[in-house]
Length: 243
Image (cartoon, rainbow, N blue to C red; front, side, top):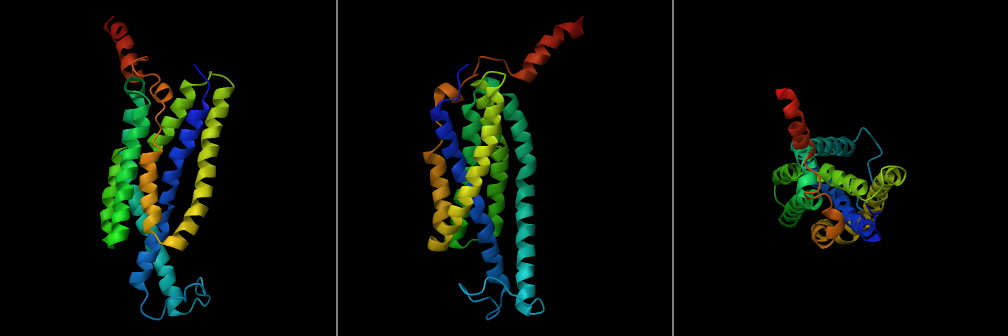
């Protein structure tokens, strides 16, 4: 086994970044809901007032309602993909020793690309937000962020010794994800403020393709080298059960 290379570390960081750009969804949902709920003249003046201060005004009540509706929609989107995501992560994770590590990166990246393309189309053509359920479902079917994170852990496990460095590698994965999310959230906010919602969403989709990890030596470690854990365990236990 070899230590984690600098190439893999760079690819990992770049692969995390486009997933953090999905933060644009939260702000876009709120904008769409707000525009549908605010009658003329009740929306706070842009660039001057960030929220209503008087809780008894109609504007404050509408703003609070818009936030509740946005949160409810985000929860529904999450529930749409979470079940499929759990099942696919268990299946592909169990077979990763046989099919190789690259699949654990490529499959969720394809799902994310489709989902973000759907969001980009919704923003550009101002489509019904219900179309986004399709994107969330497809991301769940392809494993989503759970499968991607599992891929990071398996690559760390494959390329580090069992003691000492492996633990640091696992910590590095979590720290990198946290730092990337915090940094890209700030950058995305500035991006949205200056260009609107369309270009950040488009950039997220394009970056998914451009920075897809390509290190065959690292990502395909274990392919056909170690039997799938579940199948191997059953094959070893079968003779004993027959006795």
